[in-house]
Length: 203
Ligand SMILES: N[C@@H](CCC(=O)N[C@@H](CS)C(=O)NCC(=O)O)C(=O)O
Image 1 (tube, rainbow, N blue to C red):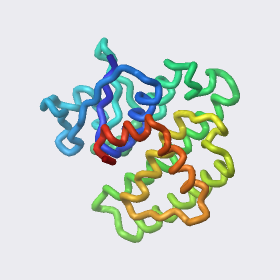
Image 2 (image 1 turned 90 degrees about the vertical axis):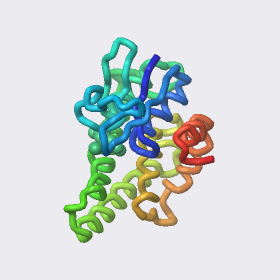
Image 3 (image 1 turned 60 degrees about the vertical axis):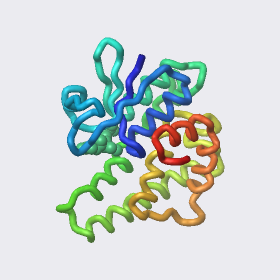
């Protein structure tokens, strides 16, 4: 069985959503990110020396880290669900293009808000940058149902997770953003609702 090391509402939410969507057999293990300990008191750094979630552990004890890698691994295990385009196709490179953008140009920016040594001015500038990145994504989405088109993919689980960060940090999307309606659409998926419930984020 797979084990997902997670923290509620953190970026580990994205692989959690895909584990639910793909109907995988898995267990969740909560990580105390300050103490770097699991619920049973185990040193989390022994599991992921990088010290952050998500980490996906396999029965043989090996561990896969990084949201982008875990999402694609999971998607590839359930090809019939269409969560990732087939490897080697142009559509797959388009998906990787979007995942890389979400990871390095959006996700990474949120790290600034946790750093007490970073000035409020820099944090305000970062909020503006995040809004401009979401504005680009709103344009990419346009009238389409999902980020890559009509098909729901792992990129949507990641984008939905990052959109969840905006409320936490008081970043308000403009009322004309396609992402607002998009969030509601993704929230209609039973796998997303189940995941949010399991993480205690909704009732
Ligand atoms: N590059 C990593 C970043 C993961 C990451 O930033 N995880 C955050 C939660 S969203 C975390 O666990 N932070 C705790 C820490 O770094 O101490 C990935 O994409 O998986």
